[in-house]
Length: 197
Image (spheres, rainbow, N blue to C red):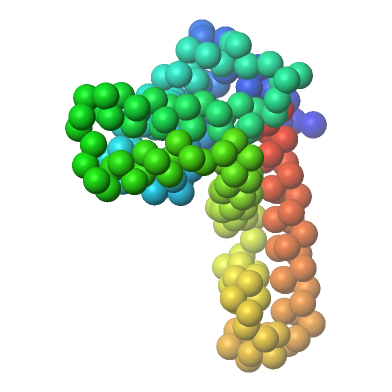
């Protein structure tokens, strides 16, 4: 195991140490966009998402020391922080009577979202986010041809058509697709271990 792997694997532990600025930068790299995507799934607009992402990151920075992995997975805990921040945001706006009709509907949606619905949404979004992140890493591992084969396969293009378009034989298409798929699965698992500890 490489030193980088050992360091990454303990990211959640490292980020709790407020003097480890690199850990916080790594944490932001993994989670900032993910939090934004969750908020967009809650149908918040871009400006609200940007404000809330900053608010949530501040709350995480302040409260990460209180996170207990024995009580909940990090993703579950993060989901609660996101939901509560969105709820607080709209509750505060509601008391200040600044909510427009559209914002009221969003606030009601957020308030009525159950913890299990939110956890399901977060789990699904997390899988998509991690797969996308892993695919970015794959670009440095595989040739464009291998990634094209895999991408076309995901789009439902038949093997024969892929072979013809890329001037490959069928066996090459199968081999390239399976190599990328196998490595992608490993990469997703590795990334999840890195960020979830």
